[in-house]
Each structure stands twice: as structure tokens, then as C-alpha cells.
Amino acid sequence: MKRKTRVLMVDDDPDYADSIRLILEAGGYEFHHAGDGKAGLAKAQKLLPDVIILDVVMNKQVAGFLFAKTLREAGGPLSKVPILILTGMRRQEGFVVPSSAGDPVFTPSDEFLEKPVKPVVLLKAIEELTTARKSG
Image (tube, rainbow, N blue to C red; front, side):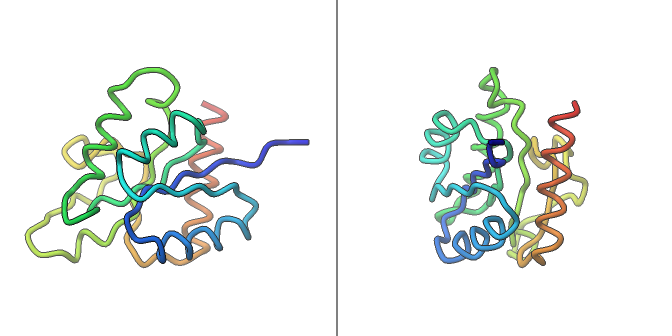
């Protein structure tokens, strides 16, 4: 039996994470959640997810940037895991976020979506990221 695609979401809002879990599980994905960057790194090392959904602002800090940077610089298989930034950060006062995913000024990510996200848009992005990784 084929293993389900593993998705790790790192977000400090458990209610929002639960809503994303429902969408992804309905789409056939295996969902895991961590409430902050430290727990996210530990879970990522244990699970070796196929894709990571990452919030930027957690616990009133831009902890998502540090998480992404740490993951990319770690080397090994985790440094290659696609990162999808899913954040409402553009709406917060004082932040300017480039719209180009993968822009090194922004963060080492592979895709960027803004909260709230439509389920079909999220599922399409996850599918594209995991397909690109398998073929790449």
C-alpha cells in the first residue's frame, strides 16, 4: 500500500491548524501539526514530511523565518523539503512581504499563500509542491 503524502503544519493557532487538517485529510494527505518552530523542527526530524506548511508570525514574533532558515541550512533531507508559507502577515502593520515565493529576501520558501486560503487553492499548491519534488 502506498504511503500517504505527509504534511507538517507549523502554526501557533491550533484552531486554524485544525481547519487545515480537515481540508488535507479530506484530500488524502497525512496531517501533522506543531505549535512553534522548536516543536516543528523536532517533528520534521522524526517524520521527514513531504511538505511543510509554515506560518510566519507565531507567538508575536516572526519565528517562521527562523524556522525556514534553520531548515534550509541544516543540510540533509530536511533542507530539501518544500516549504509553503501560509500567513496573514501582509495584513499586519509594519511588514512588507514580497509577493514572489522563493525570493531570498523574503524567506527560503517554495510557495506563498495568504490566509485565509480557499481549500482548492491549498490542495493544488500541496499537489504541485509534492509532484515537483518527486519528479525533481
